[in-house]
Length: 226
Image 1 (spheres, rainbow, N blue to C red):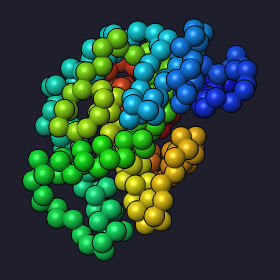
Image 2 (tube, one colour; image 1 turned 135 degrees about the vertical axis):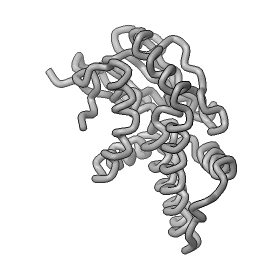
Image 3 (cartoon, rainbow, N blue to C red; image 1 turned 30 degrees about the vertical axis):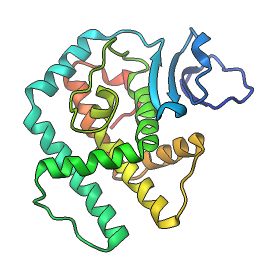
């Protein structure tokens, strides 16, 4: 039986047995005990809460260790993705080219301001990726924020930076060009799922995917396969 993820926004439905993770935008499913649930609280800046995930402390131990041991390499990854996203934004909005040699601190400041301003896109993307990557693997009980220079709530904001940031750039840029911003979370979630079908999304997903594989996660437990 194929497993599914449900996006819940108060609709009157009965969840079938093949749904093993629910992303709840109404924050009403605290009673749910049979499935993993990700609460996305839109009234508190889209803060995420994770319920009923099994604990997977060993994998998370190596994931955290990888970040602290390879800080410079991960900063280079962040820099590459950040420049890619900001170049797109500058070109679309102002027909200008971003300086390639922008100091890292200045670059990260711009990235952080953009994520904070449009965190609904970033957090919803992270919620979906959490469901796709960790429903079967499990989460650690404690998820610190490793790169505190970049706006976000926990380690998953760091791990999923590449796909979540580029999606946030695309959507926020479209908002400014169109002069409107979608408020419906289901619409945003579907937009992100469409984004994942973009041919270049695969290279962005490789970054968290291979970090998980190197940390000991089994490929068959990750829904996204590359």
